[in-house]
Amino acid sequence: MIDPRTFHVWSSITFVAAVAVAGEVLIAAGVRELGDLDTIRERSGILGAVRAVLTSGKFVMGAFFMALNFFAMLFALSIAELSLAAPAIASFTYIGNAIAAKLFLGERVDHRRWLATGFMAVGVVLLTR
Amino acid sequence: MKHALRPSQYAVLIAIMLTASVGDSLLSRGMGQVGHVDLHHLGLLWHALFNPFVDAGIVLLIGFFACYTTALSWADLTFVMPATAFGYVVIALLGRFWLHEQMSLSRWAGIFLIVCAVGFVAGGPSKTEHPELDQMDAGAGR
Image (cartoon, rainbow over all chains, first blue to last red; front, top):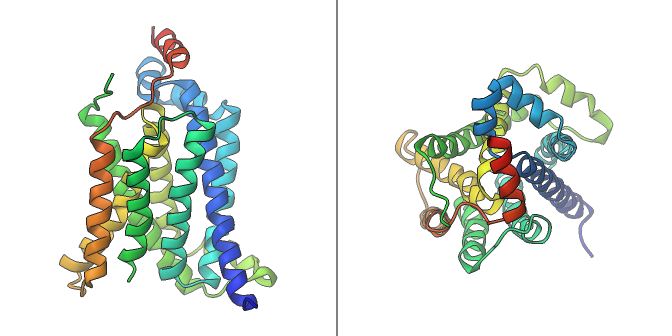
């Protein structure tokens, strides 16, 4: 049987990663609909770019998830060691993002990007050893 | 079409690498000072906002968020992701050459894998073609 503390730690890590994936995909979908923010900034100024971003429903939802991710991350770091939580969350988030980007954003995730995702996920784990 | 990046766009990717890694480190140090937070003491999360390391971390992470949002407007999520991973390499190299920390073989292996990941992605197109959306972008830019 799984130790309750281990279960608690891994549940927190999985939750933080899932919230991060939801947030990043929603933000990417929102700004993708707006177009190049550099172009918008050149045309309407920095305030115009900020206004465009903040009036995107998907972006605002994504920002909400990222804020939730921030506090969930603080919580996770208080119950799990940084050397475990940070790479585990990063690895799960990279893999989750690649899957979600293909499914929900229609990105062309070719073998090169899958390989890069796998390398990143393993790489951040190795970095903490 | 291969979406080539402008120098200013590379600068945004570098800012993503630096602000995310340094911001996370500052947050970690700040939360270490704040102490253990559990479901019965969630008020400590509010208390954490008055820690200078947490505050500095928040400022850098806001900068990261602005750069990240900008990057996602002209590049795929799976293209921008390696830039965030490269931040871990920056931290490890700072530890090795600035703080003179010992680097294990597995850390060097991790750095090698992440550098390879950046190379794989950087060698390909930065953005997936979406003809309908790209037409809308062109219209908006007029």
